[in-house]
Amino acid sequence: MNDADQTGTRDRSAVALPRARKTTKVAVVGAGAVGSTMAYAALMRGSARTVALFDINKAKVEAEALDLAHGIQFMPMAQVVGSDDVAVCADADVIMVTAGAKQKPGQTRIDLAEATIGLVSKILPSLLEVAPDAIYVMVTNPVDIVTYASLKITGLPPTQLFGSGTVLDSSRLRYLIAEHAGVAVQNVHAYMAGEHGDSEIPLWSSATIGGVPLLDWSGIEGRGALTLSDRDEIAHEVVNSAYRIIEGKGATNYAVALAGTRIIEAVLNDENRVLPVSTLLDDYYGISDICLSVPTLVGRRGCTDRLAVPLSPVEIRGLQHSATALKAVARQFGY
Image 1 (cartoon, rainbow, N blue to C red):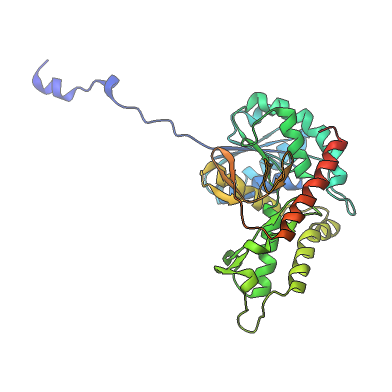
Image 2: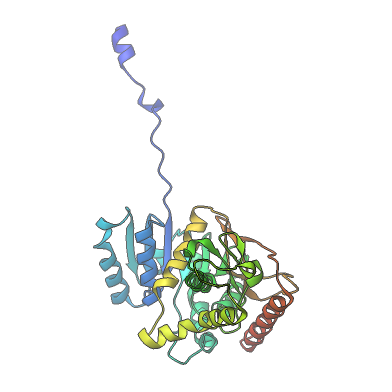
């Protein structure tokens, strides 16, 4: 072999092969109104490369996945699959559990507890077999009780399994504040905390509008400050808006699905984003051994640090009342 042949010949064994790209996978458990809309929102936002739908109703879940797949051309590149076989969730990075008893008009979220806990106690062990390292986010109501029971059922660490909490409620709060103040909702920072339900409270002490403490907001363009009466009205609307939506259309699905994708993206993108998710508290303003929503860091390792945001004495009492109410419900079911 001459020199030209030697220089022109390459040792293929020395050629670096392209690395297999790490893709992201989200599994949504439950193909009802919330689950299917969450899959749609995750695909539209490009939250993950693969979105899997799992439901025991084979015809329903396959139809939802097929309907979504037909629109993939108009979304960020992704794959969507649906099955009644839990294996469809295998190796998921994040699992969003939306399956549960459906809330009917007039029912509180707490009314759903027994049926939903029974359901997740059957689902979670099989999910853990196929996706032991996933971050689990409980979405189904009553989310705080279900999250607490799920931690007991699975034995997972509280960083790996938590609830969607008051992420949606906080979005409702910010929307109503923005409407009153006449500013973009993105310039409002405020949290609902405690139970995702009737005992939740707004954290007015730490709320801001464009960097201005909400309690110091004096208004713009003829819109006045938020009076105590205004704040009470807003809080009442946040707590009761879901009931009005359920009465009118049977379910809440769009906003909760978008809130869920926000959590998904915080995990997959390792954002360390502050979100009011429902986590197992340990001496948070004296509250322990119950799942409640407080501002929490959410990233690739799940939920980590809880932020000790400034609370007024009234807000501390409100959180403690919420914890006491939820503990009483949890004890009813042996947790």
